[in-house]
Image (cartoon, rainbow, N blue to C red):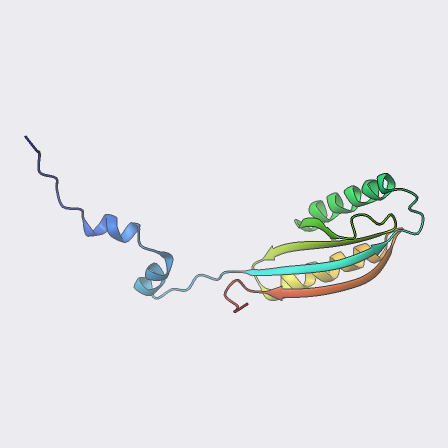
Length: 130
Protein backbone atom coordinates (compact mmCIF):
# COMPACT_ATOMS: atom_id res chain seq x y z
CA UNK A 1 0.00 0.00 0.00
CA UNK A 2 1.05 3.56 -0.59
CA UNK A 3 2.02 5.68 2.35
CA UNK A 4 0.69 9.22 2.03
CA UNK A 5 3.44 11.82 2.00
CA UNK A 6 3.25 14.91 4.09
CA UNK A 7 2.78 18.06 2.08
CA UNK A 8 5.94 20.01 1.38
CA UNK A 9 6.26 22.82 3.85
CA UNK A 10 6.41 26.38 2.64
CA UNK A 11 9.57 26.83 4.66
CA UNK A 12 11.52 24.37 2.54
CA UNK A 13 10.18 26.04 -0.59
CA UNK A 14 11.42 29.40 0.64
CA UNK A 15 14.90 28.01 1.16
CA UNK A 16 15.07 26.90 -2.43
CA UNK A 17 13.76 30.21 -3.72
CA UNK A 18 16.03 32.17 -5.98
CA UNK A 19 18.14 35.04 -4.72
CA UNK A 20 15.90 37.78 -6.18
CA UNK A 21 13.01 36.42 -4.10
CA UNK A 22 15.24 36.50 -1.05
CA UNK A 23 16.15 40.11 -1.77
CA UNK A 24 12.51 41.09 -2.12
CA UNK A 25 11.33 39.26 0.96
CA UNK A 26 13.85 40.87 3.28
CA UNK A 27 14.11 44.20 1.51
CA UNK A 28 17.86 43.77 1.14
CA UNK A 29 20.11 44.02 -1.82
CA UNK A 30 23.31 42.03 -2.15
CA UNK A 31 26.12 43.83 -3.99
CA UNK A 32 27.42 41.91 -6.95
CA UNK A 33 30.95 43.36 -7.01
CA UNK A 34 32.99 44.59 -9.96
CA UNK A 35 35.17 42.95 -12.56
CA UNK A 36 38.27 44.76 -13.78
CA UNK A 37 39.68 43.75 -17.16
CA UNK A 38 43.11 44.79 -18.38
CA UNK A 39 44.19 43.90 -21.91
CA UNK A 40 47.79 44.71 -22.77
CA UNK A 41 50.44 44.14 -25.43
CA UNK A 42 54.01 43.35 -24.50
CA UNK A 43 57.06 43.76 -26.71
CA UNK A 44 60.12 41.71 -25.79
CA UNK A 45 62.94 43.15 -27.94
CA UNK A 46 65.45 40.54 -26.75
CA UNK A 47 63.16 37.65 -27.63
CA UNK A 48 64.98 35.22 -29.89
CA UNK A 49 62.58 32.27 -29.73
CA UNK A 50 59.08 31.24 -28.76
CA UNK A 51 60.63 29.26 -25.90
CA UNK A 52 62.16 32.46 -24.44
CA UNK A 53 58.86 34.27 -24.90
CA UNK A 54 57.01 31.52 -23.01
CA UNK A 55 59.47 31.79 -20.11
CA UNK A 56 58.83 35.55 -19.81
CA UNK A 57 55.06 35.10 -20.09
CA UNK A 58 54.92 32.35 -17.45
CA UNK A 59 56.79 34.60 -15.03
CA UNK A 60 54.62 37.62 -15.83
CA UNK A 61 51.37 35.66 -15.48
CA UNK A 62 52.50 34.13 -12.17
CA UNK A 63 53.42 37.55 -10.77
CA UNK A 64 50.09 39.10 -11.77
CA UNK A 65 48.21 36.16 -10.24
CA UNK A 66 50.23 36.34 -7.01
CA UNK A 67 50.35 40.13 -6.59
CA UNK A 68 46.81 41.01 -7.67
CA UNK A 69 44.79 37.79 -7.38
CA UNK A 70 44.19 38.01 -11.12
CA UNK A 71 43.35 35.45 -13.76
CA UNK A 72 45.59 35.92 -16.78
CA UNK A 73 45.56 34.46 -20.29
CA UNK A 74 47.51 35.01 -23.49
CA UNK A 75 44.79 35.91 -25.97
CA UNK A 76 46.58 36.84 -29.21
CA UNK A 77 49.90 37.04 -31.08
CA UNK A 78 50.79 33.47 -30.09
CA UNK A 79 53.11 32.84 -33.02
CA UNK A 80 55.22 36.03 -32.79
CA UNK A 81 58.52 35.82 -30.93
CA UNK A 82 58.67 39.35 -29.62
CA UNK A 83 55.02 40.31 -29.13
CA UNK A 84 52.21 39.06 -26.96
CA UNK A 85 48.71 40.16 -26.00
CA UNK A 86 47.40 39.18 -22.58
CA UNK A 87 44.18 39.83 -20.70
CA UNK A 88 43.86 39.80 -16.93
CA UNK A 89 40.73 39.95 -14.82
CA UNK A 90 40.27 40.84 -11.15
CA UNK A 91 37.14 40.85 -9.01
CA UNK A 92 36.72 43.40 -6.26
CA UNK A 93 33.94 44.51 -3.95
CA UNK A 94 33.78 48.10 -5.18
CA UNK A 95 34.51 50.00 -8.38
CA UNK A 96 37.43 52.01 -7.01
CA UNK A 97 39.22 48.89 -5.74
CA UNK A 98 38.90 47.22 -9.15
CA UNK A 99 40.17 50.37 -10.90
CA UNK A 100 43.07 50.65 -8.45
CA UNK A 101 44.08 47.02 -9.00
CA UNK A 102 44.22 47.61 -12.76
CA UNK A 103 46.26 50.79 -12.33
CA UNK A 104 48.70 48.99 -10.01
CA UNK A 105 49.04 46.09 -12.45
CA UNK A 106 49.72 48.52 -15.31
CA UNK A 107 52.36 50.26 -13.19
CA UNK A 108 53.96 46.89 -12.37
CA UNK A 109 54.01 45.85 -16.05
CA UNK A 110 55.57 49.13 -17.20
CA UNK A 111 58.45 48.68 -14.73
CA UNK A 112 59.52 45.29 -16.15
CA UNK A 113 62.30 44.47 -18.65
CA UNK A 114 59.89 44.25 -21.59
CA UNK A 115 57.97 47.15 -23.11
CA UNK A 116 54.31 47.71 -22.34
CA UNK A 117 53.09 48.71 -25.80
CA UNK A 118 49.35 49.19 -25.32
CA UNK A 119 46.85 48.84 -22.53
CA UNK A 120 43.07 49.09 -22.13
CA UNK A 121 41.23 49.07 -18.81
CA UNK A 122 37.58 48.26 -18.24
CA UNK A 123 35.66 48.01 -14.97
CA UNK A 124 32.16 46.60 -15.05
CA UNK A 125 29.53 45.18 -12.76
CA UNK A 126 27.83 41.85 -13.51
CA UNK A 127 24.58 43.81 -13.25
CA UNK A 128 25.59 46.07 -16.18
CA UNK A 129 23.93 45.52 -19.54
CA UNK A 130 26.46 44.13 -21.97
